[in-house]
Amino acid sequence: MEQGKLIIISAPSGSGKSTIIGHIMQDESLRLAFSVSATTRPRRGEEVHGVDYYFLTQEEFEHKIENDELVEYQEVYPGRYYGTLKSEVERITAMGKNVVLDLDVLGGVNVKKMYGDRALSIFIQPPSVEVLRRRLISRGTDSMEDIENRVNKAEFEISIGPQFDHTVINDDLETAVNEVHSLIVAFINS
Picture: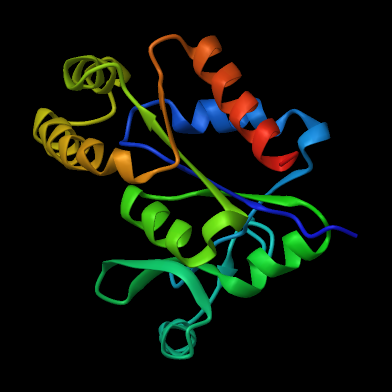
């Protein structure tokens, strides 16, 4: 069985990345599978280890960092880690499936460097910073201070976009979904 490939999708917050990934995942012919992330945060509600997340202690997570067992990780605040296990990527690709990694922009760049030609990196970009600001405001979920922080972070992330294999501007959702789909099909079949 042919080994699967990696598809890295990154974007500034509010660019429509999750919506685009949701549409792409519906095409069964692409043999896509999400990688289950590891975290040190406690389980919530009915979450299941190995399904929603791999729930690790801080010590277990730090041990995996020391042993280079993670594709990428971040410490969102002291002792609270999130990351992608190499074993999870290998488990999915060994089944002949293509693993979709929904990563922050710096994580996406680093994973692409790690896997090279085995990975396709796609950067989803808003049409403009102003459009992004309006989208974040219209969501109604963040304070103006949080929105300005996200917009400032997005400006930095957009400056990193050229390091990705492809940039897709999400001005029209259907067009962006079709463009991402075409890039994935071409990559999987190459």
